Image (cartoon, rainbow, N blue to C red; front, top):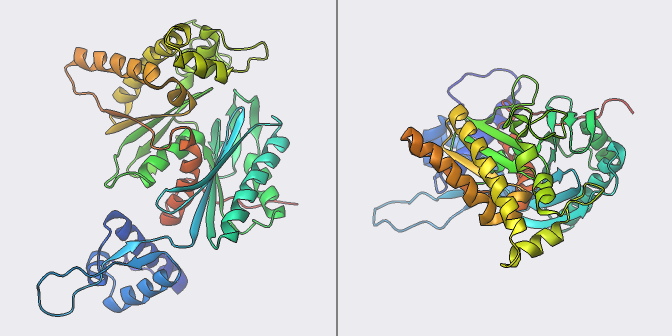
Length: 410
């Protein structure tokens, strides 16, 4: 960063330089101040000054110097610490809300969930903010500073305005969720905390990149399997969201021409075969109000004498394998990550069937299939991804696809 001349506001330049050091240490913990100066192009005095500030603020910590046998003063290794810093992530799902507080390393410090009490935009946003506020207050009381809040939404999101464009499983279209959340948070005395809204699968994908192994798998496709089915796509360490924010809506790609009706109004969408409601319907555990009986599904899966639920998950997994093949052919990713409620609930019955189908396509083509793995945080993948996105935006403030929400009007 320092090799590019920047003129103007010195605070801007300092901010860029601080981020450069944090990103270097995240990618390679244990670098010394001398190493950081060489890698960043900054002077040793600048690195020394910024390192001291970042240590004082809790971002960095010094490790013990390792004996090497060499003469002279040995350099002190530095690492990303995140002492006293917290990130909040949330998922507003079709029927549940998940909220977590996490460290800058992605360690979940606390998690809470509740059934969605009110499906109207105002009611749902109010409930979400109440849950976020409680967890934020708890983190603050423990001495942590909240760096940001990331919220996952069940549909395509305009990343500039925070407008949820279309969420068929909750019945919302062109809803200003971002502004509602920003106003609610401002009233809750959290108006100074940056808030980001993004599609739930996009956030989960960022969670796998930001809080996963280094170097990160890139490209990466995250498949969210729940009541809805979607994908988050990471290319060159950034989200690919498309022209209007709706890239990755693979649940509404067609698996069968003139097939089953889908919640979006089309026929034959992948969601009508892979979504949790489709599985519950086949297993006989979808009630008249179109609500999934999760407890009965879970109990039946655990009973070896009950086959109907296992078969329903296996059939859905086989259909998911077709979807994985399409994602593989389209994006050629290093890894495909499976997450969401259906993956967690169906387990091997669901996932093994998908991998088996994908492998059959790979064998037909004579190609090695990409790595397929389960999300690190299971059902919390989107909420943890929200925390990760807040961190992601801090580390890439001038290249992020989503800007922090600000209140417009009263």
